[in-house]
Image (cartoon, rainbow, N blue to C red):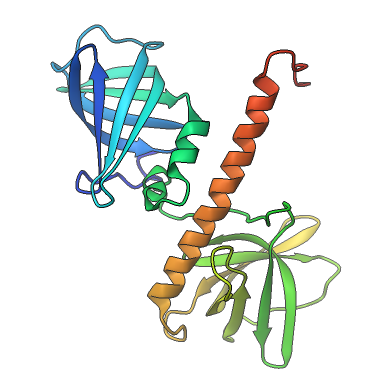
Amino acid sequence: MEAYRVRVRREDLTLRWRVGSLLVEAEILSLSVEEVTFAVPADAVTSVAAGDSCPLFFHDVRQNRHIEVVGLITACQCVEEELRVQVRLCNREQLLESLQDSETWRHFNRRRTFRIQPRSASFQPIQVHLKWGGFEGRFVLHDVSEGGLAIRIANRDGIEIPEERAIRVQIEDPLEAEPIEFVARKLHEANMGSHRRVGFVIDALRTVHRAQVEDRLARAVLHWQRHAIQARAQIETFHESPGTPPRQA
């Protein structure tokens, strides 16, 4: 987890933990819409255990935005002079609603690469348009991040993508009318059984306004991921509703 997530900086997002009548300042170690792990001085609190309710108060410093979340402690451990606490966030629907259309969402998905397999509003796979030399075609987008993408190619399709040639890429932007366009180069290829997975990385030398392209990709991926999490939360809420038949194993 430490190697995969990016630690949240205090100047970006702060966290306070309500313990009885106290509000304890905490250091965020990892964060997602499902759980948070944080650290406080070992002598700041006493008598806390797994299963305890855990009211938390986040503050997005740059946006001046406050978010209240209630969770359940799933683990706590003293490491040297600090207490590390892992909390499962309970009201994810409310949290997702409060993060809707907010830049604060980024803090709750602080992965090194915002990678996801995107889907349209109707849950259809997103397609990507590729062009090189005299060829152009559309392919199913396997996954995408702010640094590149991967596509699916059926094994029966004999298309070979050149290793060194510049590949022009066009992907629909779910947040803007104009598509996201950039130049990429082939990075790797793997046989996945029924199809080939071909990965590309953005060509920094040939892509105009690279920083803007990466920012648009990151925002698009966060949009797709937010909707995927919301859909999953709705499904889980449905299955957990009273009177709903249990899921089959």
